[in-house]
Each structure stands twice: as C-alpha cells, then as structure tokens.
Length: 123
View 1: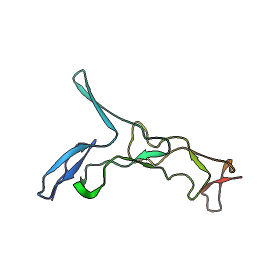
View 2: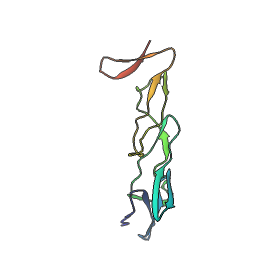
View 3: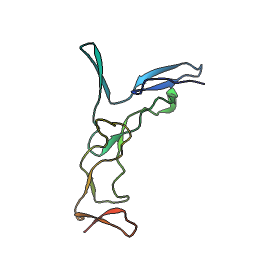
C-alpha cells in the first residue's frame, strides 16, 4: 500500500509498485525570498471555490486532481435566479470552502426563508 506522505500543500500520486511522488496542490504558488519559502494560493473565479486538497493517495489515471476550482453550490438549491458575487474560500483556508457570496437576480430581488427555513430568492 502506498503511504502517500506529503506536505499539507501537496498530494500523493501513487504507482502500482507502491512508490509515490508528491505534487503541489492546484492553485498553490511557491516563491523563495530571504532564505524562506512562501506559499500563497491563487483565487478561483467568481462562483467557484477550490476543491479540498489533501495528502491521501491519488492514482495517476483516476482523473482526480487536488485543489482544482469547481462551481459553488451553497446558494439556495434549484434557484434559477441566483448570481454568485464572490469566489469561495479565504486566505487562511483556501481549499474546500463552498461559501461563495450570492445575490438574487431579476425577477427575484430579495432573500427570504421558505417553510423549512432555507434561504431562497423571493419576488
């Protein structure tokens, strides 16, 4: 079994022979300055957030890259009149935060609560 031990900003790609290599998570930018390595994360476009990035093993042909930008889904479910106004995540927690800000689009203009307490767009 592949141990896949990588740094928190990397994920492991395991091979059939049990070996592995560590790859940087998508969106991570590394620079060296004054004897130190600094790691920052690029933002996703508005309406997207970075998928979780962790150091569990990913097999090469699985098609599952770590930390890619994916569409936010935190707005009211099945609302056709939602417009995302920000990307998800934060500087301290760039990965796995499906928390994009959103607003209601015409013809709905305000957020309200439905009978189950869910936030929805209302006229």
